[in-house]
Structure formats: C-alpha cells, structure tokens
Image (cartoon, rainbow, N blue to C red; front, top):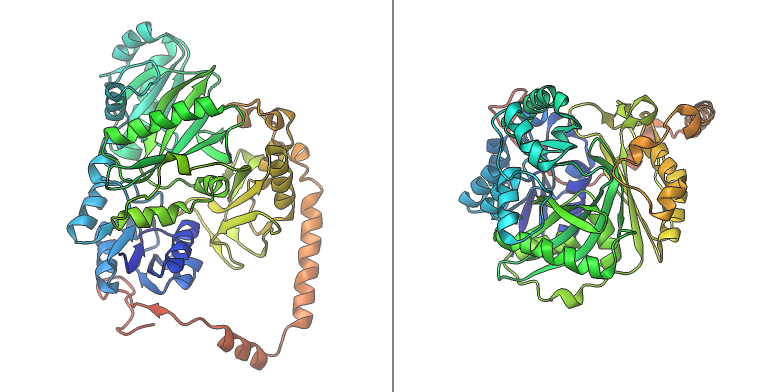
Length: 509
C-alpha cells in the first residue's frame, strides 16, 4: 500500500489529491515553486518541499528536482495530477525506475495515446471508429491537398503531438491549405517540438463527448458514463455536464464499449478519458487523455465514485472489485471552470491580487479551489483558479443550482469567466440541450450583454465599505498575534537545496 504520496502538481488538483489521500491514511507531500510558497497545497500537505524557481520549467517541469523531492521526503509514490508531467511517458519511466509507485497508466500506454497519428492507427486496428482522414502524417501542404481530394472539405489539420487546441487549423478550400499548414506546423513545432501534421474531415457541428474509464492491473475495466464538454472556446472548455443531454442509454453503452476497447488496445491501467466527436447519431474517436481530467468531479457527483481513490487503489495493485453492472448514474451534474480571464476582452488572461473572496455553498454545491485572499495571480501558470460543481436530481435543477451558485461567487482583484458561464446557462438553446462546440463562440460577450456595466461600480462601493468596516473592527496587534499563534498549523517545510539560487540554510523551516 502507498504510505507517502508526492503530488507532482499544484493548485486545486494537488488539494484534491491531498484530501482523498488523507481519508485513506496516506501522507501527502507537496512541492512548490517560489511563487507558490504560501499556496494552499503547500499548507495542507503533511510535508512541503521547495523546488525553487519561478516558472514551470524551473520547478514543476524539472524532472530531476521532482524526483529529488521524492527521495528527500521519503515518498513511495507519485501522483502527477493533470497538466505539467502528467502525460509525459519519460517522467513515468523515471518514477518507476526510481522504485516509486506511479499513479497512472504504463509509460507505453501514455506514449501510444500521446501521438495523435499513432493512436489513430491503433484505434483503427482495434475497431474503434475514427474521423475519416489519414492515419499517417503528410510531408507538406501539397500532400495535404492531395489527401483532401479523397477526404473532402472542410479539412481539419491537426498536429500529431498536439493537445490543448494548439497546432490545429480549419481549411475550407484548397487555396487556404498552404498558409494553414505552415502556421499549424510552426505552432506545433514550437509547442511540442514536433511539427508533423495530418488531415482529417472537419465536422461542422459536432459535440465533444468523452467517456471516463478505469482499469486495474488484473485485466478488469469499467466505464463511468459520458461527460458533455461542448461548451468550449478555442478548444478550451468552460462548462461541462454529466450525463450528456443527447446521449441515449443505448448509445452510452456503445460509446462505453468503444472506450474500453481503446484502453485495452494499449494495455491501459488507471484512470483515463476517451474523447469522441459526436455528430448526427455517429461518434468518432478523437483522442485519449492518459490522466485524470479537469472535469472528473461531474462524474463523481453522478456516480458516487471517488475517482482519485480508485486511482490510488489500482496503483497499489488492488483489483477494482466490481464490474460494469455496479456502475449507475443518478441525477445531473454541471461544472464551470473559474478562470482568470476577461470574457469582454476576448477571454484574455487577467492578473492581479485576490482582494476579496466569497465562495458559494449550500446543498449539493462543491468547489475545488486553491484560492485565498492575497493570492497573486500571474501569467506563469494555467489561469484556472477553481472549479464550481453542482448536482441536481435532473438537468433543470442542476442549471438552476449552478446559476444560483455563480451569482453567490465573488472573486475580487481579477476578472473571471463566471459572467460568460451565466450567459451560457441563460440561453434557451443550452437549456434545451441544442448546442455544439461552436456555441460559446457564437454568443455576444459584450459588457452590456453580460450585465457588467453597472456591476463594477457597485462592487467597488461594497469593497470600500468592507475595507473601512474591517479597519474599524481590527484587533490590536497583541490580540492579532495571539489569534495567529493559536490558529497556526504546524507542518514540515524542507529548506531549499543548497545548489538552488537563494538557498536557505539547513534545517526545517
């Protein structure tokens, strides 16, 4: 069994893993960069180890530093969370070679599904339906033009090693191919170090539907139904729900079996998500995310299964202990990603200091967050600040509950995408379930439409009043120090390694 788990990540996902680990009697180890020294994940974990550095490359993406942290803290397992090194087969191999338990799929499975061209070839061989197109890269734009004659326009040019919406261009006619290919390939080369491209049919009005799977090391696998992730902009999701409003029980069974086929084809173990494009009654394999997904809470809310707990169990070698008949779905769940971005300004990143914070609550409201007042929001890390999740007995109830919860939310100091999510929830087409992956981009996100023009002044007035009230009620310095001493939570902080810039002297901090 795992006894001490290092979480190779930060923010809300690190907190999410820490909480389940604690319930299972597993000690957790947080790692942190210089800007994250006061982050909640470093304060919640039993042990906190500094990596040094202020950027991801200098900290969370530095494999040597992460493994050194595991050794120094006596960790016997590593959970990668999502993002950073979560889908890095080389990192998984290094973890295993160090004698640690890797909470994730085998490196070969990560590698096989990480290459979009290779995964298409694997899925075709496994009998999983793929979008019409090539299953091998093309040499240049001219070769893509020739391939398009058989595939048919519009064409989606995709990076073989792509992800997160990078290295993708839509080509609607032959004259656009040369510039689109050059731009997409250059973007992919810069982002992934691999500029290979392949063409496939572009589905004009698809839905993005994914299936959550879990496999153990004993040949057992189950799926936990589907998630609808079509509310997205530039391939970045904003609102997710479980189940999907258009997937029937019969279709769910077909998609679930296809997802399990996909996992078996690469000898999968652990949690994974198989993503499909759904259009006009047909579904096609898009990719497999070989990790836990950001939107996993909606599946947990509907199925009642703690997916992180299952990850840790199967990583420890335990069998699942149940089959597909044990999985049932009850009610409806919706998740909204609370990102530091300004929807009025085209969803540009927003930076600043969290000056005021009010998180929603009430029945069947869950918030996965690493937010705290005084937190600095910069550009070094992903803009997602929190995830707001609700459950209801049916879809209408879940929409009403999410609307209420978003109205309670207040994150002062930065702009967030919450007004955009409220705009989505209020739309008749969303409420009827009649939407696709282009829905969010079709909405007017102007200040007047979002109802923000009069809100800013009101918020500023309330904030000034609160500051004045706090100042008037502030305790004396002596009383404040006494309260702080009583409330302080003791945990181990390791000093910076002596080789790191700005190293601190030895001894626990």
